Length: 224
Image (cartoon, rainbow, N blue to C red; front, side):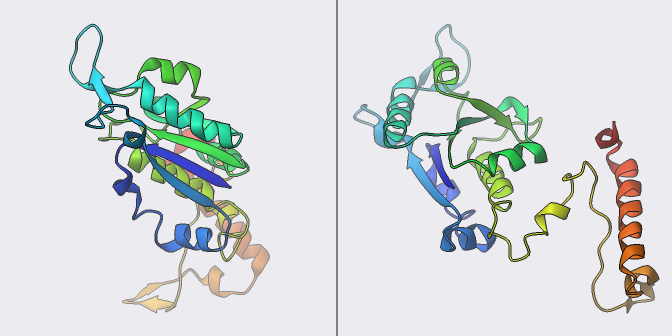
C-alpha cells in the first residue's frame, strides 16, 4: 500500500511513522508513506497557502491553487483508490472503514487546517471525508496519523501475529474481553481460574461471554 499525506505541517507527522508498528511496516515493505508539504506548491513568494474567507468571518481558509496542483501532480503519476479529507464534519471513523481502506492500493489523505479548505477542493477532488470524533483539533495531521495507524496494522504481514488484529475490539461489534498475564496472583488479585485450565473451548466461551458483558456495560450502542 502507498499512502500520500498532504499537509502544511509535515513535521507533525514525522514521529508517528518512525517508531513501533508503523516503522516495522515500512521496513517490511508493507506500506510506503509519503508526506507532502502543501507550501511547496504555493506560487506566493512567501509560500502562503491560506487566505481570508469570502463574505467575511473569523478564521483563514486553505487556498485551492496549491492543493489542486499537488493533487494533480500525484494523480498524474498513479491512480488513487480514495482521496480522503480529514474533517470534523466527515463520517466518524469506525473499524469497518479501517478494514475496507486496508485493502486499497493507493490512498491520498488531505489534512485540513485553519478554518478548513476551499469548498471546491471538497467538491471536485475528495472522494471520502472522515472524522475521528465529535471534537475539533488544531489540524488534520493527528487525525491522519490515527487513520493511517488504524488501517496499516490490518495489512497482512504488519503484525507478528496476524490473528491479533482480527480479535481487536469492534471487529465483531463487541469490545475485547479482559486479558491477563503472569503472575497468576499479585497482591491477592487472582487471574480467573478458567484461563489457567487449558480448556480451550471453555476459555473461548468465557471470552465471548465477557466481551458481550463488557459491551453491554460500556458500549450498548454497538449492540443496537
